[in-house]
Image (cartoon, rainbow, N blue to C red; front, side, top):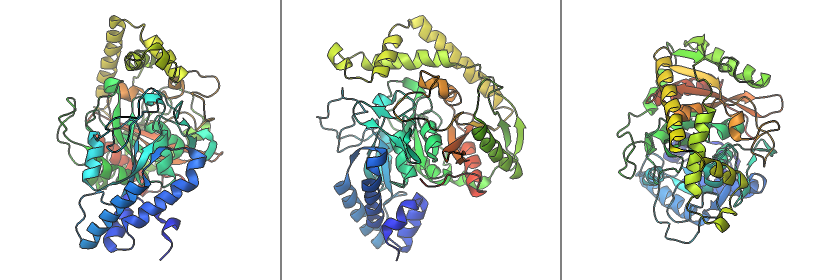
Length: 465
């Protein structure tokens, strides 16, 4: 048999599970391969804040014994996974990229989706990097430094789930949990060439609640849509700790086989000319849209009425940042990322009436998108108008805040719709390009069907870094 480290890190979660069932290899082989990969690549990309090697190997050994007995405990038994370090994971601190969070404490609770993965037999490799409290669209923090792009370490991995995206791209765990408050799953998925899904808000329960409120979603990051569907079915559902959860969820894994024939697809290349998209990005997205048409989808160029809601988004996002740091004294605030401190100070100046006016904008946008989806099942846009730029800065030259270069992502956090980024190739510099799929609230199945169809026909996927 081929040495495990030469191929196991290239396999999807489903392929690993099939291999365990056939006794081609064991969870111990897969976890050792992942740990070897971490040792090799972590100095280059800085995707982890903590690696739990001993615990992972012990869990893998227990999983291997279950598979040997023909008694796997769940749908992820033995699959190596990672978790963004804003989500609680029992056994170690969740520092959220901040020097203001004390590491001491019991740390004995799992966040709801982490608990679901643990119950289904997942093997946790460690916690992945995040900007401080997940506040921006790139991944660097005063605590853990800069996370770099696996395809070019001089460039950013994106954020705020940048560590998770880099880990998946490098084969360090087939699955990862990320969070998305304005694009934080989709941005790094696009930059790193992996699949990332922001589910309908409330489908995946959370605890504790995000400081950014109902803008923030938790969802899967994976090699492809089928793996993401597997993980979404595991982490969806009820949890009493989240008062806003949606309750029992219809499984999405079985919907993938339905394809896209007959789906009504709206293609918006630039939100009606509002967004300047790089030609290389635009060409790859258009080519993928044409593949959807070739698969039987009814494709029409149509622009949703988004009327750029950035001011409203800033009011809500910066207010969340202000609330987040409100408890910190002056000395501890000096430990914060200067950008976070700046937006928090701005957020503290908003009045209640300004906040409620932003809620009105959000409500109106949600209404308009609801009307849009009465005519179209799926909206397709570029995930981002550009590919990854220099690591260590919040925005490329000519922009200041991260929202200036993410115009396709944050509107759909305001509306709480499911949205995914699908890799559709690389530009002339070899950097991944993402296509975004958006559906009406509660129609995560449509997003995953369209994404899976792109993978099945070969239009989706990026070369391994």
